[in-house]
Length: 190
Image (cartoon, rainbow, N blue to C red; front, side):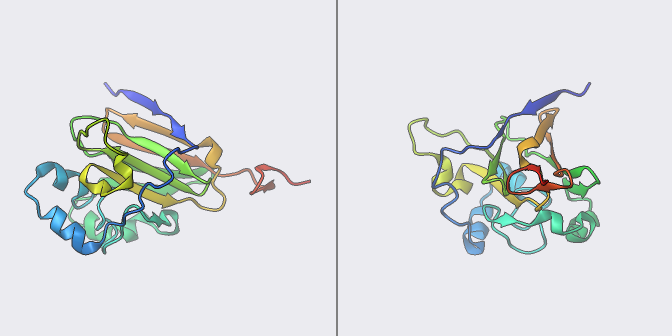
């Protein structure tokens, strides 16, 4: 039996300084060299949150223009070995992203829309002291994961839907704006 949970898509974020520390390639190599199975599951080959997902290093806290690329082409290095747990597509109605969320024993995945231009998927893989500063403002990779994706110009960010299936498969649907709408206002042009 499939369980489904609709996730709230947050459009106002109260954390202005999040992701301010970049994950550099050398830092990631040292971090990933740890013998920690959870780190390898969260950031390993094929994970949506891996800095190496697209075949070369790319900081997941930087916005990536995902829908400008075909998933079969961009992920070909992983598809040939059956390693990827990510897929995306475009239809006449909108954009779809499907990704397996790393099984870290707890599911606290969050979906945010940043200024109507970026969809951000994040979550924590390690418990922290509740009195500590927000984990997203420092060396975020020590406690959690993120992937920030640029949305296409015609994306209707106000109507994004996110679902989690069986606590592991994330599906995000971003509808396209109706044709004839002013993109800045979301209203009909007359």
